[in-house]
Length: 229
Ligand code: C5P
Image (cartoon, rainbow, N blue to C red; front, side):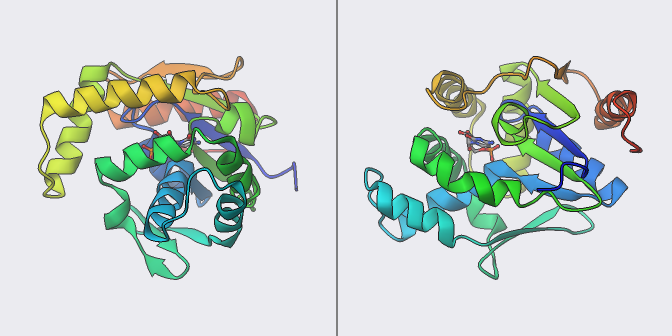
């Protein structure tokens, strides 16, 4: 693995703005993007579809090794491709997010998806979005960011995003689901959600996306990376 290729890791809870910030940063700089949450979502969907028993470690390993994922940066967002099929719509429901958070707590699943994620580090650079990008998958990354925001703000953003996609959701159920998902992500035994000690911690409540990008790019430049916001 080429340690010369720059990586910016952007970790944090769901709805903190990681997805938008990572997409825009990668697109602006012509870098690759790893949406690791999408990888766990894809894995959960594939396990559900193929009826894989979540206690069967051999089947989980085989499934992890057989997945081919690609993120294409289109004009207005990321297209996610699984084994040559576009799967964005199926991935974005709260139901899939919840299933992803469950399979992501299983150590063998995290192990099976580790190399797949490391493989996204290709020239000229990578923006890696997730929960453990800076702590576990790319601990050597020169620039680590941890984005967060209040639960209410994150629920409000998710509500806007999901209603725009025509999904029927309520604020109350989103707040409940976000709390439940945070609880599981922060307290699991492997790769719990937490900032890397050297990460820039940025609370995005009340900040515009431009302000968030500016702060990330400034921090990256202070770490010697040549990026624009
Ligand atoms: O970010 P997103 O909501 O798409 O992630 C779905 C779930 O996948 C998260 O709730 C989390 O449990 C899991 N995940 C993870 N490690 C990552 C990215 C996501 O455990 N690096």
